[in-house]
Amino acid sequence: MELILWRHAEAEDGSGDDAARALTKRGHKQAKLMAAWLDKRLGKEWTVLASPAVRAQQTAVALGRKVETRERLDTSSGARDVLREAGWPKGGKVIVVGHQPTLGQVAGSLLGCDGDVAFRKGAIWWFVARERDGGSETVLKAVLNPDLLED
Image (cartoon, rainbow, N blue to C red; front, top):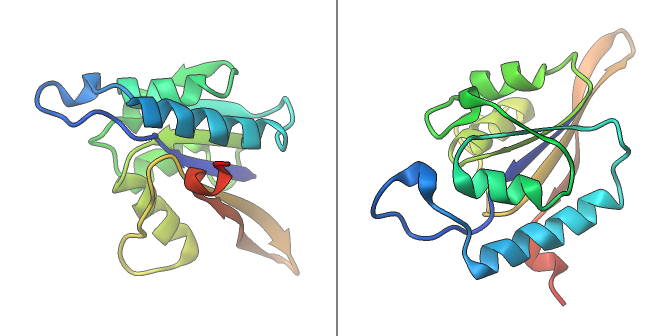
């Protein structure tokens, strides 16, 4: 299985409905840059799952693929919810667009860390589950911040 955790890009400050917060101009740029980078590396068999929050939806849509909205990926979800929705470790190739601190908790869990991992806005963490020598292991394939993709 391959799993890409993609934190939503920069969003407006919240003073009302948190789920309705949209991406800023910078956030749209971050999502577009990361989507372009990903698109060059992904085949067609990837499934894109996203939180119902507007900022996550806008980030996911930048990839230009079908997006499946999953209520269990909203801002109240936990690491187990994300892994269950993605089908880890036996699923296919899945991108989850979600939120911090949850995605940092997922990354920490997959890395065997105690505690959360910092997860920048618009960044991706790409994991692979594989069988080796009769056992299973998790490989961290890539970590990328959209600021590194800017000209």
